[in-house]
Length: 229
Image (cartoon, rainbow, N blue to C red):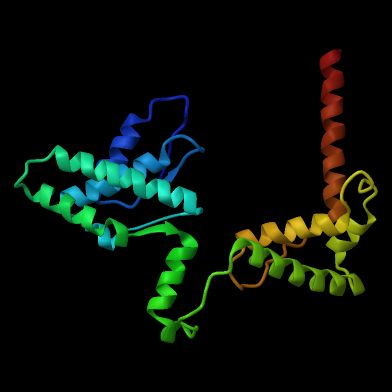
């Protein structure tokens, strides 16, 4: 289920459902700064308070260490607030007490750190060295540059149609050149394609597509002339 929250209308009903509707799986789509993290924290607190789950069995991942640290701080504050608002001897109070104890061990961090934890817990099944380390950004960048340079030199020996079009472009004089453009495209592709399935290339009749666009433009031009008359 996907809940879209346009900024032009009140979304309090959606936020209430995110917090309270714990029997369904929700996918929330919203722009930056609209309160997705707050909604996530409120839902986690609701799950803990209702007894649906313990913090030790909840996974919350973000893209950066900074965001993960902020998420953990906000979650601690909200759990403490919920704890203070419950009866001292109630079951909910006990659940929040336990959650505070589990907070430092909870799986709240980046996607990379979560995956690394899973691999370290099961190195035999994953067939990896249990002492492996995730390469920092500077080292990963150097490895990417080396791999890209090898690929680029190789592709120049027998470039495909896409690379030939890039090399033929006449508007590169005021830009950084085909190598830099290809590098940016490769970096973007790497960030979005973290899997090894083959790339599906959809065939396109380029000349036919161009002719169709030209025909549409000519038709629009004729409509414009009729409107002027």
